[in-house]
Image 1 (cartoon, one colour):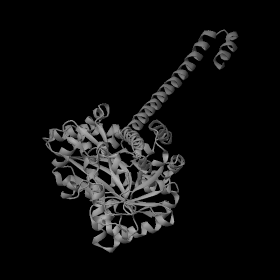
Image 2: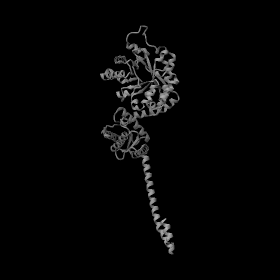
Image 3: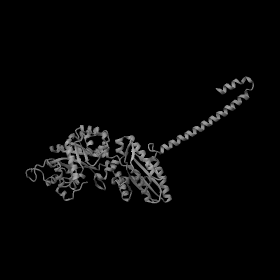
Image 4: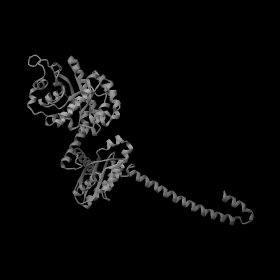
Length: 520
């Protein structure tokens, strides 16, 4: 508008062309300058936006460390350089030991702040040329480049552990954080892929965590275990498709009433080349690969159906409890109560005969899911805490578990009963607490007659273990004899009390007791 006004105002002076041309030149130059400035500003800000987007794509927003995607890019580059330069490279995989406890007790904001503190400590513990990345959750990876030997990699792990030994100030309180570190070392002639190094360091980290050793270095033995684990993972998918899993049943015996109390359903894998595998050989892999829920449902259905069949074959079987283990993956499924109700209806099994066993630490880790457990309890299903005494529970936790009806004492306490007074005192305390809360106590892993006598002296009458019988298939359970009370032994009238020999031979094949007691 200013330009047009100047042109029309000067037209009557007779020198329009010159003035207009001059005005046009002045404003044209101004417009060009403005346009140039605008162009430069746009390019500069566009470049900044691109740089910011590229940075965000490579970095973890919470800690500012490299993210998983950028880690593997840097790892690949470092691996190639290490091989060409004839140097050693190390990969450290870290997992915080108590992060979940702090995160759950102090809140997610405290957990986030702790992760930022850990990130800073890691960066201050390594060399400037090393790569530090957040792998996910409370897991971190450090890539150590251009090292002279294996000991140099271990020195980095030890430096990190020293830095982590200092307490941190978190929301006004001092917190001690610790970490478990797995170390994988690549020499110049290493033929592994870069991602294999992370996998191997992860495997070594689990070894360190179990041993509570701070750090562990991946070795040849672990390499074979990893290969075996990958084979198991691959074969598990086929096992589900081809019905290779079978349910075994281990008896629970009421020694005071001299009768069968129930069974615990235990899964076995009829592997086509390895033979019959116990749960220790594959359940951890099933948990990590997400297949545990499918296996758990399979066992639940088979066990409930088998209990219903025994009910039809023997009236005495209707007093028998069928215990089924529930894995963490199943407990995280909000549809679990509906599934249990559907399975009971499908099998035709009364809810009161089913007992679900949940490991103590799983319950403690998921206290926010207690309402779901209460919903299961309202179906009439029994709930048991398995491996009680080995985890994080306390009397305060047990008081919240009003839906639980059974405590199962872990065999580690039973094994040590004769070695000192501590474990015997723990068992006595559990029995006293259980009576006060109207809970039933079951002792598992009973393997000899001395243990039986000690447990009875502590007031425990329901037991399971190799003293009575190992897990057997359903076809080895005789409904005509197993479900009947043992009113007489060898034709003699029932005697007061119970001898250990009568109990140990009541439900087991005597030939089995010639072998040393062993629990799979």
